[in-house]
Length: 117
Image (cartoon, rainbow, N blue to C red; front, side, top):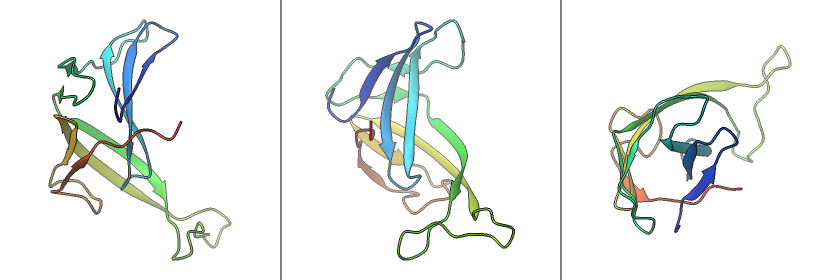
C-alpha cells in the first residue's frame, strides 16, 4: 500500500497506520476488530488511494520543543506538554484536516504520509 501500512494485530484485528506530521506521531484506522474490540472504520479497499469513513478524531498530549528541536524542561524537572486535537478524513489518499484541529494544518488537505516504522 502506498503511504499507509497495513498490520494484522495479534488479536486478529486489522489496522492501517499513517504519519501525522503536525501531531508528530502516527494515527491508525481499525478496519477489522480483533478480540479486544474497539471502533471500526469503513475502508473502500483502494490501497493506492484509500478512503476511510467516518472521520477520525485523535486527542493526545505532545511534548513541546524549542527552536533547536530540543524538549523544553519544566521547573520541576518534567517536560512541557500541550494538548492536541486532530480531526480528519482520509479520502482518495489525501488527509483532510478539519477546522477544529488544534495544530498548524487545520483546514488543509495534504497527501497521506507513511508511518515511521
